[in-house]
Length: 456
Image (cartoon, rainbow, N blue to C red; front, side, top):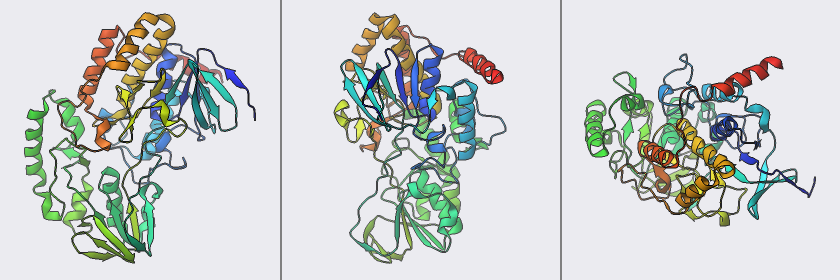
């Protein structure tokens, strides 16, 4: 252990080697920006590695967005992958990405960052072993699904209560009467696992959800949407609602509440299995929990069920545990970041992945990382242009909703529409004179990484 601080000069620190951190590393490496990369786990992959302590991933999890609309820029998923790849395939793909671009060599594995604090115009990064380093910038890429949120209900429960982050295998449900609380995409997946494996499966919901099957006309739903023209929401919404009424019918028939919001105003359920189990009575819908009493769960409609396991699929609190909240403007549990990325108060504190978006995140990470890298490059090579961007960070507050009136909740305060986000990002690049991503842009990195791999 040491108390001295190493001055890393003009280097950048990246915290986290999941998809966002790897995207940032590739962007910095392309522009020749020196960086150090820290990962607390023993390998890359972030939440997609089931061996990563605290990951919310489970054995049956698949990508919500489809193969052709997802993935890193200019690095498509293999054609042999299914329309919706499994978590094991996504992990393999992510690790191949790191290997292809030679990103692993710069990562210090089993090396957690315990604290980041201001040190004049730089940032002091302290590691778990006590060593500290000073950097000109820090990219926080540690994700938003590491602090489980569980509600508190009155009464005492004699069975088992857990958060869905602890769930791994459908075998855990065998012989049990299971209640899944919450019907986001993970909650719906887990409820389906319970339907197929538990003695009885129930799901408790407080509001209705719009459901979009993963395939429409035999084509992945998001791929079908991306093929068409960029229609405004006022046109797209009624078209999609009419199509869903024809394909799915009235979902309240199966006990699901009628949604209290319009389509697209919250992330829809991308699930086809759920309707199958509801139609066959293998999942029963219940309202919110009123109280717990021994082995009974009482609901707000006066009903009650004997339950062995209550599993809260109730989301996560956002946090950056290695940075004091004073360095961010936190609002409703979300950091106020320009373009959901750049800290408005603290220069060169960058949050990559701190957003909710209605389309593939991987490609979005790459587009944002490209801007991050060019901004950091300009600080040393075109300081006047970097100063112009500093002013944008401080004052520009664009509407990234795409005309969608997202639900008024803490979760949706950070929601952005993917098409609106990418359009505005393109406008910023044009204004700043920065380059857009282009096919072949990273070929030199691939070639270099391949040569290094052959030489070793």
